[in-house]
Amino acid sequence: MAGIDTGGGHGKRDTNHEIPLIPFIDFLLCLVAFLLVTAVWSQMARVNADARVPGPPKPTEEEDPKKKEKQLHVEMRGEVRFKLVWKEGATVVNTIDVPRNTVKVPGGTGANGVAFELPTYPDLAAKIESEWTNVGSHRNKNDPKLDQAVLHTDNSTEFAEVIGVIDAIYKPTREYLDKLTGEVKTVPAFNVTFAVN
Image 1 (cartoon, rainbow, N blue to C red):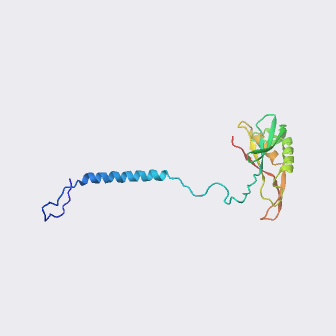
Image 2 (cartoon, rainbow, N blue to C red):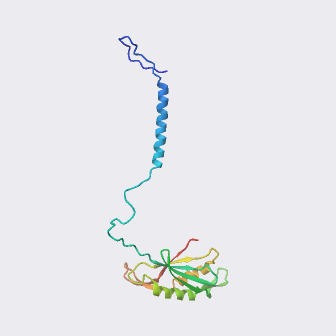
Image 3 (tube, one colour):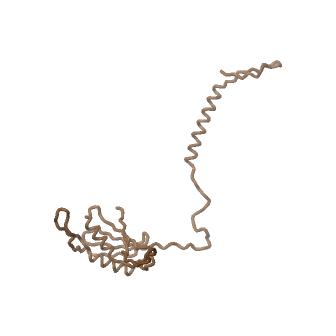
């Protein structure tokens, strides 16, 4: 055991006492370890919050909701028809069925010298073009944005068929003024993306 010497006393009582320092040091080490561990857990349990509540910043004024742009969804999942669906966000605006008439056109010769054909869909291209003419949002040549088309396919769809549908979606074109060069270009009216299955 450790002791503390106070230098001897002048009175009747002895001032030298045995103080158990080893258990006291053990207790302090356990206390420090406990505080370190709880400090880490309290940091992990902390949630960031502020005083802002949901809703418009000024409740007296009406908030102007952003109008969602229309998107054309082209579904080529069936063997008989295509389905064209116009949507604003999650809301379906219009649904059109187009027969799946495939016209084969010569595609050239492959590496092995054999000629091959590519599928095209003229009925789909004509319907998409008429739909864009009636419903399309971005037609002004000063507007840099394109209308959005989302292509939905099965995993078993052949690559050549997907290319044929993309070509049909790219059929409607519009003029676009390139602000860097100042020239007017003809560009596809739609930007095509693929849907995730």
